[in-house]
Image 1: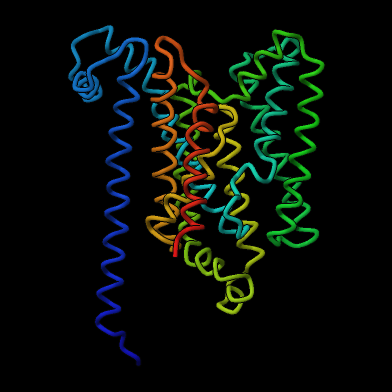
Image 2 (image 1 turned 45 degrees about the vertical axis):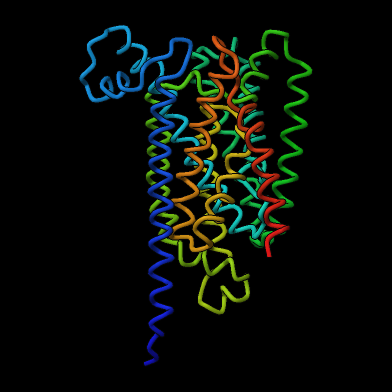
Length: 347
């Protein structure tokens, strides 16, 4: 039996320790951003008072109402959705072997947008509250988009190229149908559709946070169970098969979980871009390709990015809240540009 050199073992332990430190720092920054999200808004609150309120030690009834009824669902939703999008982006970039891939590449977001627009347009004919109908329709059509791509992949094989091409076809199909609905919509309905497509956390509730959080908590162990196989997949399909990985089954299994996570997240907050694209690149730059560390790190940094964007959306214009989708795009474009330039200039 071959013994590993002592230097290699020391280097491996040092790398693992560094990855743990990176995740710990990310969690600390996330906690700080979460507290800042609760403290910022039209009424600025002292962070120590917010912390006391969360610990059940608050004495001001108005502050208690602002923190627990208004801001806590929004802050928690930012963390849950950001973690979901960061995680799905890391998985998509792995199974498609494409650094520009995210959960929106396969048309899931476009399907959800069409479903939400259809529900808004037909709202008067459905005897249910819009707060229930719109997320349900968005989730159903996100699932339809996933089923179309997955069904095509089962017929032709779940290769990265075919998944991307199927997703592009699905993307353009639902974008065309969405444009048709916008053309037919009344000015009032069109305004609601556009607002939903911008993405917003303002309508979040604790019940919705519970749904997104439950799906996230159930998906993480399932993805981590395949962490070794996903890491092997980064070596290429042929090498992964040589190591005993069932590549097509792994790709479809991961795709289903990604679709579920994205569909649930998009259904409640609308379309939010760049988080699923940027967060995995930041995590990969800091912890490497080992999926055991990359997946949780991508979730942490995705939650941090969206939480920070939530804070920024309330500070851009005092008294107003920018749609979160616009803020993530404004933050994501320069960050992604810096990552691309850094990768091109790195030795």
